[in-house]
Image (cartoon, rainbow over all chains, first blue to last red):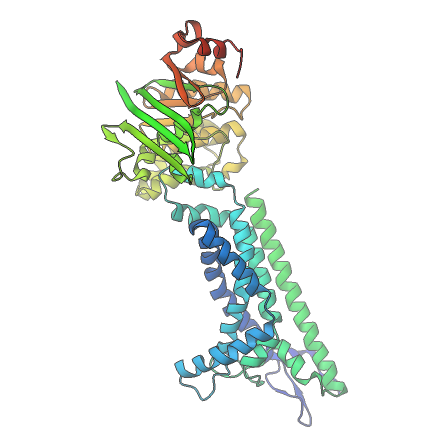
Length: 249
Length: 249
């Protein structure tokens, strides 16, 4: 049996064990995109604030300590984040939303936010710190406070670097497997914040070990979909970064 | 009439004393030039006049700077308000990476000017800086697209936009070509009718061309301060005579 592209990409039901099997991955696509989007939506503003605080506002000794902690966090294996999520985030979500289980998409998003923060922070901090210092000096000389100058001049001038940081963050969020499989419940159904979900990545890893010929092919197809999406996202960002870089010379 | 009076100003970078007990009156509506060899403290002294040295860590200042009958180093004074009245133009042109219009409107907007007033402020400031005719058709273009000389006049216009009383210029023409330099010198002669101008310059011809009074600094001391004509043709001090006739520096 062959699987049509349309029912593969837009089919709402995944049931590979049934006869005949259903190989719709729409739910995975939506879960992957939704969670990555939400992750970036929260992680980017937090990261920019932290990056500005570390590089520009806090005393340099404090900044140095925080910076080394953050680079340590960036190097922790994702399975550890998943484990921490299982121990802290999942019970927390269960309690706050009064659910029978905290293994939900929202738990995955929270873990992803925590995981992507270190990368986005350190890349955006580097780009914010490398903005010409004379802009700040000019702002001072006009009686403008540092905080205002940072948000109106310095951060916009660091835009292309921050976008590169966001690109890395999205890449990590959409490609993350281990941490999210541990906290997301991994049930193939249409995504909803307070229900268990399965992602593109976790769909592959869940069934690959026992997949028979056809399912195996479909799983490889999911990998291809993931690759194409990452490729598109990166191309869009490359374009945006180039455009932003051109404005600021 | 003097607009700024410094009394027993000392400045230390850590243990090192960079400015030694300087008493100086700066006359209103005149151009005062500060000259001296590199490292003599003239730029440091200039930055004392609008508290720009506040941003440097490990820098201690004693003494008084009286401006408009107040000591700007009084602990109750907000340095931002001082810098609004005593503007500064730097050695390297440092327009913000914004449009020409936004560069001028930036500080007035921050200090509470209404949107409706900004057009007029922008036009008047650019006129006063003799830049209006060159840029009036491209106010929305990036300021970074201007030439170095135009950028520096834009920085002057940006300072004028706050309607300051004093404009400090830290080697503001040293990065420019002779024609741009000439334009700015011309402009300063015009500006001194409205504002008081203090310039730091390495170019002794420039001081002799445009300054009403000239102060010669050496190793953090104010060696001689007199009418420019006296400094250059009839200096009282031997070191001044040596410096202006080119024996050292």
